[in-house]
Image 1 (cartoon, rainbow, N blue to C red):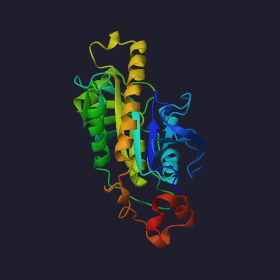
Image 2 (cartoon, rainbow, N blue to C red):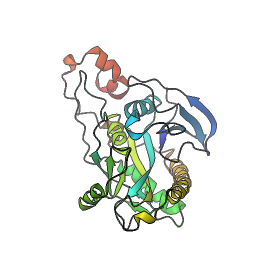
Image 3 (cartoon, helix red, strand yellow):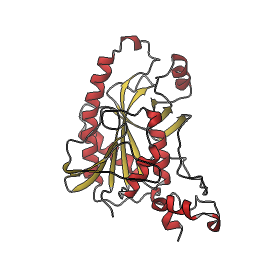
Image 4 (cartoon, rainbow, N blue to C red):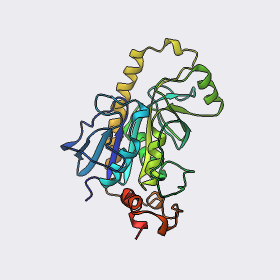
Length: 290
């Protein structure tokens, strides 16, 4: 049974959604283990929303420990059709300043130790990922941001480089990423985007710039107090943007191709897919297994 059609994943500094009413906590079990935390289900106006703190409440999980598969699979079980993800990032370009918001349209994977697919163990699939962000959802985010966030600079497009962490970049790494043309750097969103595509859920990222990574000549003048201040103010902007975009899209049915991403992706012969694999991935590919 659908409990929420819109999901929100909050990153550093976004551990709750105070604007939700009629709130309840829901524990969701998945074939891939437990999600980062219990889901917070609540109403934003007349829209039911499923909120999940990516790192868990109190931030006990480092990026490499986040159960990405369980998080996205649980969203699917709850009936979520769109995921809005918010996360703090470092800037790799002079023009992307602290307190700016970036809506990236590409990802670059520099992680090493994380499962990024639901497939394997008896079933193979290759999903198209050339355009990893849902264009329709990103359009709605951009339109809402430009109207609702007075004084905030919003950048549409760019590449989010996802690093392993939890340590930040060396200066040499940061300079290499800049030479590659990367826009922002973070530690979490690549796996979410890949898994959301396999789950046929629309996905977009709100990237909240807090610093210039370590490449900037004035990097040493940036203090942790400044970063935390930017993080807190960015979180307030993100909450306002999320509330506004949910109101904008609440009564619209997704018309993008995200909902059929797996239609031609499964390459294992049907008679070779074992029952355990079918059951494990039922929420994602059940409609293609009949």
